[in-house]
Image 1: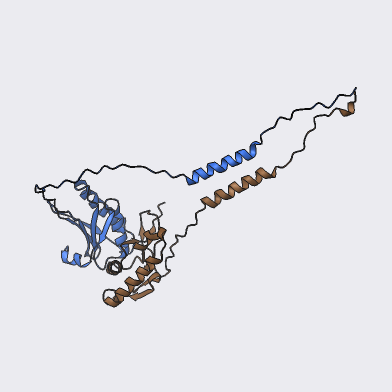
Image 2 (image 1 turned 120 degrees about the vertical axis):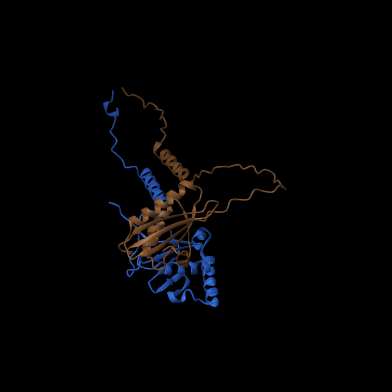
Length: 158
Length: 167
């Protein structure tokens, strides 16, 4: 009996299996790619305005913004900057022009965001008056926006 | 004595790790791609032309809430509705600072809306008008009070408040 030829059970050294590790990492990457949501809903309230406080907790949606200052109205998506005193006395030519701009803005939106084109986010300071708010809402309806979202800060209840 | 090398049958062992990986992949794919659709069936009866005179529909309620300034430090809330039994409901609310949030105003509006809703639970639309000097904060407080009962709010002109003569 040749004892040298008997093979003993050797302990195999631990080997790192790279292929399954790469598979797992690929899965993790795919999962993160699919589940990551990049939220682009961010409203920057102008520093000159103090937001009103609301107890409602509705979710914020990404709609075009109109900012109502105490003396004028601004809407960058319509290239609009107008004193509030002129909103009620707007000429039909100007109104037609704003309607056209609103229509152009709507047509540029892709199909998935069609719901954004009939809604507006209205930002106003809490000390602004109802007359200005109503006149602005009336103007927006005249140029084709159907629904106004009034933006306010949520009251943090302790 | 030499033993011959015995020919051993190497039993193939399935490598489980890649199988598990691919199964997990398939599960994730199914998780993200599955969407549930509820199929509904609607049977539309054949249209019927009736020559009999239809019963006259009830006149609409059109509830309106007016918020007017009744004095330096208070607001008057008036809820007015039409319909077969028109009515009105009034309340006074003190206000110290019109630019500060007011839970009294919100609660008063909510109570009026709930009272109306006990009589007319199906009405979900309300028209709202505030005094032209009322603040945006007051508008937000009033809307907060109405939102639960009346999800559909329509703003009407401040001139309606003046014409209503609520003072």
